[in-house]
Image (cartoon, rainbow, N blue to C red):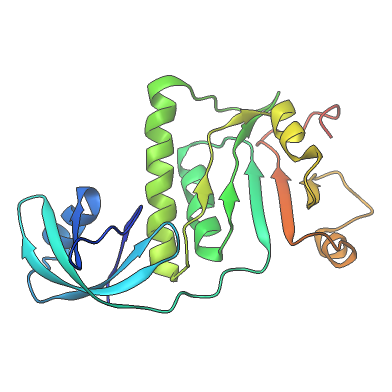
Length: 208
């Protein structure tokens, strides 16, 4: 069955109204209508089998038929921290991270970052990234999509993770003695990993 996502499933007498982009995709793209069944997911991991009861121009009213089992989440809470990338590479990174079960993507800017976002441009990009993460989670049948956080400065990123009980790794092209596989085999932390990925121009030595 087709999967659809909403931030929170709030039912009234067993009925849920779907609007916005998910309703447009359901009704205009997939041409679904009354009697069609689907899976409705939300940001908490809940999912239900539902059937379309009625439709309007920009909405679909669904009847929840039964709760469905939730796929097992990853036992490792992974946060990928990439330097902001240009549009297509950043979209691809978020898509694949959400498909693979990454918990969060935390972009940052550093001295060699080539992309900087602010204001309405940043707001629009965050909405766009959230939609990519949700669609990827639906396609890969993940319990919840990856959370995409607003970008922060490099120093703020380090401060955020400094006291966290987690395995922390910076992926640096000039490292010669420690590879990623060896690092993960040696680490035994509290089920969380933060991986910092550099910009196209690489990290400045001071940042490393």
